[in-house]
Amino acid sequence: MFVLPPPPKFPVGSPAYAAALMQMRDNNMETHNTLKFPTGEEYAFTTGEGTYTLREDIHLATPPPHPSEVPVLNPNPLSTSPIPVTSGVRLSLCSIKYKSDSALGLQRTATNNISSLSETRSTTDTVGEYEDGDNYSDHESASGTSRTGGSDVKSLSGTMLSQSVSSTGGMMQDGLAESNGNALTSVLSNAGSSVAVNKDAKRRKPKNSLAKSNSSFVSRINPHEHLTKRLSERHSEDLYFFANINRSFNWMDYASPTWKHEPLSKILFTKAHPISHDVNQLTRSSQHIDVVIGFSSTDIIWYDPMSTRYNRLNKNGCMNPSAVADIRWIPGSENLFMAGHMNGAIVIYDKEKEDSNFEEDLQNGNFPDTSKLETRDGFQVVKSIYGNQKLQKQNPVAYWKVSRKPITAVAFSPDCQHVAVVAEDGYLKIIDVLKEKLIDVYSSYYGGLLCVCWSPDGRYILTGGQDDLVSIWSFPSKTLVARCQGHQSFVTSVAFDPWRCDERVYRFGSVGEDCRLCLWDFSVKSLHRPRGNTHRGSVSSYYSNNAKSWTDRQSLRSSRNRSDSNAVALEDEEAYHLIASKASIPILPPVMSKQVDPEPLSSLHFREDSIIITCRTGHIRTWNRPHVHSKDGVVDNLPQ
Image 1 (cartoon, rainbow, N blue to C red):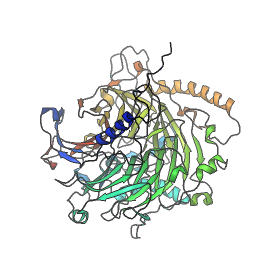
Image 2 (cartoon, one colour):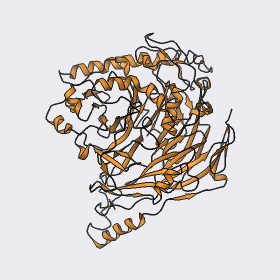
Image 3 (cartoon, one colour):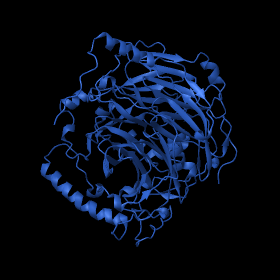
Image 4 (cartoon, one colour):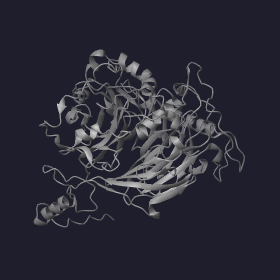
């Protein structure tokens, strides 16, 4: 029987409603950031390598709503009205000065160019045949044979690690970024984008000054009163981080021993909330940092904190009318970045190009109709990077329709040629950026996927989402290797720990809305076949045979519905993969699971000396590794 929801406690416009609004404003009054150093047994956890201890807890102040922004107050608990798009605290780390790569713990052996992995299947990651009660067979050597033989062998000992460190600690060197992304950037350069790296030339800066801005988009900027002095007295490590909370965006000096909680500058926006942001690791220097910020209002800002100048892109949704869920600089490029929007589109922008009325052109039929995306797991190139040169003079550089549901996260592979995309539809999609082709589609156990990352060597992909699981996918063999069970709520962030990875064991971590940090050690040797599984033979062959029959049905269904529309069909029938049953996939337990915060967690970052975890309400907690002592993070000795 249908039951009507209870009426509101008090009508809108009444004195009680106004009092409730004032109470909400009072509860969210802006205060200063705080820095604490908690101690005790509850602020430590132990793993096989030793005990991690909480070094510090930075709490970012939540700014009050802008006077023009009416707080959303919904007294009806059963209401399904949409809420404003927002996110928890996310970090972007930027290290200006570098440490020697010899101090890093992970050293990879030479591996074939991963770009060849999209052509034919490899046997290096295939899990071998097993009998009842036996373990899965060992992996082959990391330097397996190429599947096409047409690619040159690359040494990944430093390149893959540095690329991973860039995403977690902001320490990738310019030369490594340039060598990794040169293939992609050269293609995009030929397509009409100015992406060539010229370190001798003077870099362009954003046009608009934040200090003198009269834009209604920016409320105000609060620079530190001793900003010039603090920048001149830089710490030896010189590590900055950028953090968002509510409608504010903070630039902070993480290397400062005592003043790291005081922002170097803090920007308050009028109504928009920063959701995602990223630092260009290629162009960063002591005089210049390129940061892109995606907002809930569809806008994107290119921001240089050193000069306090900015450019505004996708203004009022002129190219895409939905919020920016995730944003990433294209590795090796000075100008190009990729944004995942909440209408299921992936868009590539150039920071120096002017906006076009792409959304209006799309509605007028000048580009393919995105409503003709035939299957829920399809892929459509609306505007190609190889399009008409006249069309490349303005943004967007490329526009791909990937899903009908909101994009939640994107991640570039270490070779910079593939991008992994996850969305609320529960699909993990691997796209070859150079070919603009969808090469793999995987499905979650159930529910949407919220986060994704690549292993340092590019062999594995981690996803986490609403099924409370972390899934490990093998990119070369196109199989689901294991499911990691340890969370009790949505998994919001996953990351590999490059300092605890080697050729045999991969260490990675995950955080979720259950306030827990889970650490995992993954090795194919340690995986056991689940009980009750009667299948014999290799796991990869099992999925290959079943996926083929399923994709045949999908292809037939698609061909029946397909007209001569501009929708791009999936070329590789084996790109679709079945949902693996729970009984057929190994379950990996965590080596450590602990509630590290009273609030739901939003992001996870590994550094050489610490683990950094953030939550939705503004806490940034740094945990010392076992080989680190004191509040300053002094390294005693690296673990062996």
